[in-house]
Length: 479
Image 1 (cartoon, rainbow, N blue to C red):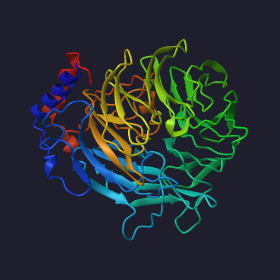
Image 2 (cartoon, rainbow, N blue to C red; image 1 turned 60 degrees about the vertical axis):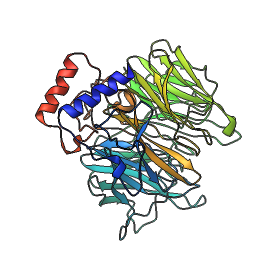
Image 3 (tube, helix red, strand yellow; image 1 turned 90 degrees about the horizontal axis):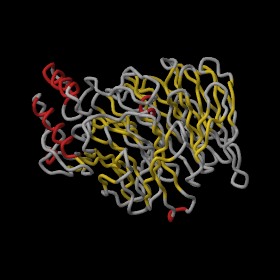
């Protein structure tokens, strides 16, 4: 079935006359994995890469894919880079990067995903040392990388602590948390401070915006007495609405919301379902007994989330599919590697990365029963700490190749659609532009609109191509 979807995608693209350049001719930082093939020209097997783009630093950032461009950051507190990369989604060639000669951009590492809205890229960038942690938020033109504004200004000291998560855009504001414990709201157009609160010792979780409220997890304790809370704040005023105190350890996971319930993981080994009106617990899933550090996503009433035990580099992990009504597991995909990646769903496939020195992989897993469909094994470094974003059947995800460097991969999934589910709907971590902000609150938003088409439709799908695509949709072909 997977190959039929890949062949269908090939037929669609070639039928509308979309031709891509031969990736074997690419030079520079892009490696053409499939010689003679490019997206839209020849089918390749699911789990194989169209191209791999080298990054100067390791990767925890997740890719955002908008208007045919993949945006991703690089670097960690231990292995500095701080570059924000913009890469052509079809060819894997560089579009632009920051910093560049003459730029005021001065970041040292990017842990979270860029957000793109209204042709502007918003990203949090960390700088300074462990005893002088600082960060800034940059707004950059999506097409050129030119700086539109920074907070704080580049001639001032940076803000607070480091940023270890993604920014969130909503209510005409940019929200971020940082490791000195502050949650901050900025004006989206100007970068001016709207409000700030300091509820916690540290914030390492990405904010979730939904229906006028910001939800964010915290790290309240220390190594000897770990603790964590989930907070809800009015997005307009910054006033606290409630706090959920049940988790017994820090919350690094970004929350997600579907069908009127908030879901969040904790490093205490539990996943919690919380009522968004008052912060009371609906149910908890405690089966992993593992750290749930990355964000869950919900589609068709099933929540997908990874867990990892605390055994260091020798630890293992699992991916869970949980019924959102009952809080019970539908299936478990066990893996010998740690799951430090948030899953995404495309068609009938769940895609997730794993972290293990020398053997980290990207898996395609059957969403119905949890069986492995394919795996990408092209990494020989620490593995994957990035979360995938799928557009037109191609999964974009970052990984570490060896100590101090990484790569961005474009991997065939065997599906023809784009990422769906609550994480994508609410643009938590990386996102794409196929939903265009239209959601139905269930994590099942329609992803069958015209979009840009990775296989060469960067220059725009023609009318005939769009009509053909709609015809495929109407005949029941999955997108």
